[in-house]
Amino acid sequence: MESVNHHKPFPAEVSRTIMELTSVGTLSTLIQNDAWPLGIGVRFAVDTQGTPILCLNDTNRQFSLDRRSSLHVQLEQSRLRTPQCTIQGSLDKPEDRMLLKMLCTTWEKRFGEEVNADLIYIVAVESVFQMDDFTEDGVWVTSSDYKLANPDPLRDFAERIVSEINTHNMEDVRRFCNIFVDVDFQVSEAKMVWVDQLGFDMRLTSPQSGIFEVRIPFPREVTDEKGVKSSFNGMSQLAWEVEKNYHVPDFKKVKQLKKIACRGH
Image (tube, rainbow, N blue to C red; front, side, top):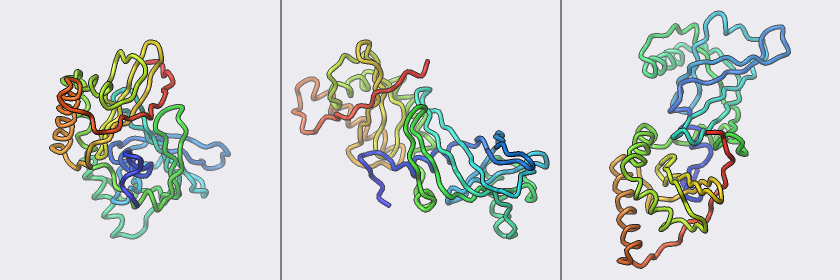
């Protein structure tokens, strides 16, 4: 699998990142003697291939013989966007003792608590439906692509970096709009939404034109916090020099802006 797709992660990589950063979702399946699916809130951990591991008590594990289920998971980003994925698969009870031991260890590392092996279930992934936000069109991800994908290496500190930049570097963020993005409207507000190894997403607000999202790639792929800050500082310096006419721009401006529907906040 390639790691770069138009300077943004693949849907499979986004899904793996969501599953790594989240520990609560909605499990939906058919209950016994009922034709209606039931959705319940569950905690989960994931193994090295992104397989969800659940701990179901005696009350909420009484499912029908039809083990088809879905696990819906959401990740809020900067209170501006909520990427989400829905894992479709079979709700299985592992029987192999060695496998159960590994699953219990994964659960204990995630939540810092011991777990009864008799209560451990997994969702054997068959397909994944990934959406970038509410009202967005989703895409289907195959089981093999999902399992082979890597979660983003910046995931554990991405939220903190975005918060720091939006708090302390607003002038740089606004300057990025003018230097790196081809906009034909006045931007009244600009915020960074999320950052990953390939670049970052920004939310632009215009009183006349509405709300837009734009993707700005890094000059090169980054893999750690030092790399993010180095790339951001370098881009900030370049943008300042171009703005002051100290540097002739030798790059193409980003032209692909996505109009965002109002979400009511």
